[in-house]
Length: 510
Image (cartoon, rainbow, N blue to C red):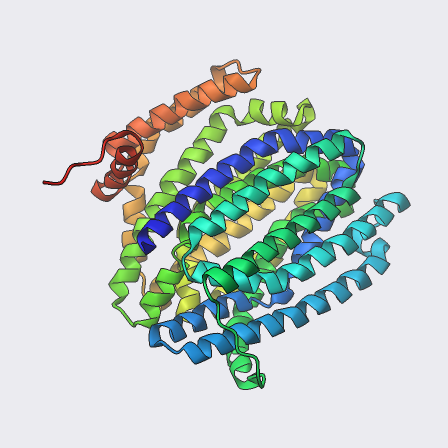
C-alpha cells in the first residue's frame, strides 16, 4: 500500500504541476492585464518578503520528520504524541511572532520597497503585506498536520487536496479580476483557501489518522536538541529563499516595477522547473529517514540516490530542451507582448543553472536524515552572497538577463562542484558512479537537442496550437531516442508498467 501511495503521490504531483502550468497560461496574463504592470509588480515584490517571514518556522519541519520517524520505528507512541503537541504549541507561538513582525514591517514601507516605487505603490504593498502575514501565520500551525499526513505517506489525500485548491483558486480569482476587484481582494481570497484547506487537514489527521496529541510540561531539553539539529537546516532554507528572491528585489531597487514585471514570468517558469525534481525526492523523504533510522547499509541510499537522479535528469532535460524548441513563441503568446521575449533567455539561463543540482535533490534529504547538513547550509550561504555580489553589476548592466547570469554562476560553483565534493568525501555517496550513470544518458540526447535547435530556428510558431504541435514533435523524438539509447531496464520497466495500467488489460492468474 505504501509503494502505491508513493507512486500515486508522484503521479498526482506531476499532474498537479501540469495543471498548474495550464492554469498559469490563463491566470497570469489576466492578472497582469487586470491589475496593470505596476500593481502586479508590487504584488510580486511582497511575495519574497512573505517567503522570508515564513522562515520563522526555523526549519523545524525536518526535525519533526526525523524525530517522528525514530519514535515510529521504535513504536514509542507516548513520545509521538508528545512531539505532536510540542510542535503544535511551538508553531502557534512562531505564527503569532510572524504576524507581529509582518505588521511591524508594514510600517516601514519606504525602507522595504525602495525609492523607485511611488507612494501609492508602497501603500498598496504594505496592505498586501499585512494580509499575507495573516495567511503565513496560519500556515505554521497548519503545517504540523500537513507534515503528519506526509510522514504517514498518505500522498493521495495530500495531492488531491492540493489539486483542488489549485483549481478552485483561479476559478474564483479570474471572475473577481474581470469584475474589477484588485490585488487586496485576491490576497483575502487566498487567506480563505488557507483556512478551509487547513480545517480539512486537521479533520483528516484527527478523525481519519487518529493523530495523537499530548500536552503537558514543555520539553525544553528535547527542543534544544532538535534546534541543534535544525539550526543549519534553517540557515539553508534562509539562504536558499534569499538566493531565488534576490533577483526580483535587485530589479525593484535598481530599475523599478517594469523590470520586475518582465522578470516574474521567467522566475515563475523556473519555479515549475525546480518543482519537477523535488516531486520525486519529496515523496521519498520518509523512506530515506527510515533507512537511516534503521541503520541499513549505505549502498541502499546510494542506489536510491542514483535511481532517483537518473529519473530527475531525464525529465529535467526533456523540459529544458523542449523549452529551447518552443519557449520563445510560448512566452510571447503567454504574456501577450513582444517585450516579454527576454524571458526566453532568462528562463534558459535559470534552467541550465538548476538542471545539474536538481538531479541531486534526494542528497539534501540524505544529509538531513544523517544530521550532516551543516556544510550544505554554509555553501548555500556562500552561494547567496556570491549571487548578490555578482548580480548587482550584471543587473545594472543587463537587467533581468544579468541577474540570471549571476544566479547561474553562483549556483553551479556552489551547489554542483562544492556539494558533490562533500557528497563524495564526507557523506560517502559514490559520486563518480552517479555522474557516470547520468552521462550514459547524454548520447541519447544528441538527436533531441538537434531537433530542439532546428525547431527553434526554422519553425514558424504563432499560436498555442503551434507550440503544442511542435512540442509534441520534440517529445516524440526525445521519448524515442531515450527508449532506444538511454533508458536502462529499471526505467523501461517503470514506463511499461504505467503503460500497461493505463492501456493494457490486467493479466489473468491461473
